[in-house]
Length: 210
View (tube, rainbow, N blue to C red):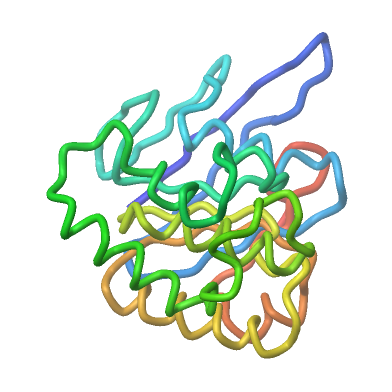
């Protein structure tokens, strides 16, 4: 479960968040909608531990903690930042570089996400040579290798066609059934309306309605 209480953060004198409070229960999909610059992606960066608020609390899994947590996976808005290697396959295995895990388990996890996202024909290609939709699928595959308990998604449907949006919805439904808490930032209101449990409108750095 994720609980956010009265978050405030400023950058260069600009107040990005003004008292944001929000709960994301286990097994639920909560979406943040709102205009660009409203503070949605900033909120995700705080929850992921990338940055720290000036005030307020972030309770992740019932504890007031900050910094990296292996139980949290974050799909950033610019997915190019997730790719480090020369091929898609090497990049998927790159996820495990600092993790002690049997090679057979690594292979099994990678094979699972390859099948899940239909990446078989893309494995030998450089991630930056992929189309927008292909890159998004590869990024989602890499994020899901974490098998997270809290999943943060920033514009996950960007570049996906209707078939892969439906596939994403099915994956999120399975994660939700497994008790994963999911917080999604999106401008895709149709996807949001079809699959979210709750929707919060972020305006000028605060949750205006939910």
